[in-house]
Image (cartoon, rainbow, N blue to C red):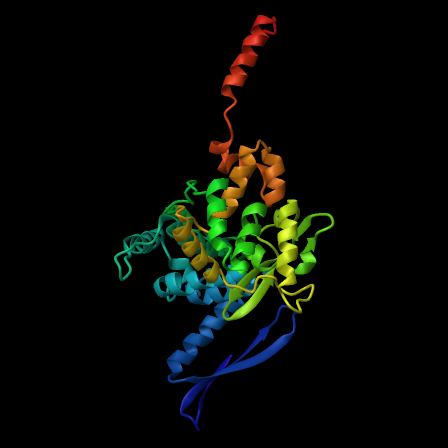
Length: 360
């Protein structure tokens, strides 16, 4: 590398050479440094990055982490990670050298996050605090696994906050039908909520649906994509997990309703989105319908819980339900265990029979 003063602008320029991932030698430059010290500091940082020297700053390592990970993660997931890194991690650790960040500094950062209050005096939720720590730990783990950092100080300190609460709200079928009746004045709202409740799909999966996803003859609905609105763009990705790619059998009445709805969409093509509404619109309609019908307000995602609870109440197994909603059966068993009917009495009676019949 070399540092030069440019006479025309009275600023400093760095010219540097590097070897790219193909092993080819490249040359580039950066202009506009106001002092030679700034230019030399930037040059030193680039050399440390090129050799994966963990004396580089946290901010510089984040650039390396981004280059390594961004293309491997869904765009909407990366947007969330990037926001946390930019607003919660870089302001605190950005100028610190990776190799010098100690557990005591992680503790100090955690305390700041735990004690934070917004303009309304509201703190971060325990779930969000856990998410913040997990992202910090991910960056240090990456440095340990691939770049020779000796230890992850975030892991040594341990997490803050807690995982999502298992408490969930759901509507009974009767409550949903009251809500649906209130939605009938707006067809797009009514049909959207019908699919959410009777199929148990996720909000993003609903908003990605196209006519081509429906096979009315076989009463099949294919779930193969998810919709997000990112930075003013419509983004359609694969569903949340590989298990989420699935085919759902629809009840006959829902097939008839969706056929009716599609007839109202003039000129719609097979691969056009059926519901060109926003998540904000759905949340507003949930508010309106709950108020008008008098049922308790639940989240959009709680309609999925409501569908699962209905299937449990009707006696379907965890495996069958998991297959329908795109979960692992162990997740259904764990998350909804309190809804499955207890068979303890039946077990005890069976053991009585075994004992009486000489089974022991």
